[in-house]
Length: 116
Length: 115
Image (cartoon, rainbow over all chains, first blue to last red; front, side, top):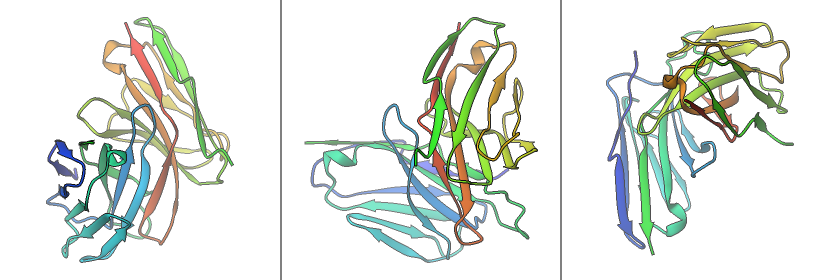
């Protein structure tokens, strides 16, 4: 069974601060995705990384996939109250001939609160 | 284009009752999934489907059943509801974006309470 450990579980910061959320596993993943979820809604995909060492930027958010494809990080620069929400990482199974069927392993999530 | 829709949004069941959670997607995705989300536990896969007529168990299938008669619909059936099934249920669909990554699109969820 593949497991993803997210840390920290809770993060409470002031507007303008920087933060990093980590997602770690002992398993190799074919891809790593980050989702953001607001209360009462379903998760919404932020980014997908598929290559070891890959870095993607989405405005103030920077996502990195570890070289060995076992870990990932999400860094937010100058956090704003609108960044408040639950952040979930999700790993795609190693795809051997297309048999993973898109199943994802989710971390337990990081609840981020950004105070004005 | 509505994406993934789920009904109902909220439901309260008594122990032993049954119900069906509905899920429909209009993106012509082959893959569909049902998850449950408990506080602090992330998302756990209940069942998934790779196409009409094909379903398989996920991580936590006990107490649930699914069917997939069309590409669009993927209902989740709860038989003999138990308090342990109190949770928020999400339906999702996906396609293969690059052959290795399956980006999932989620519905708004159904909040179920069993008392």
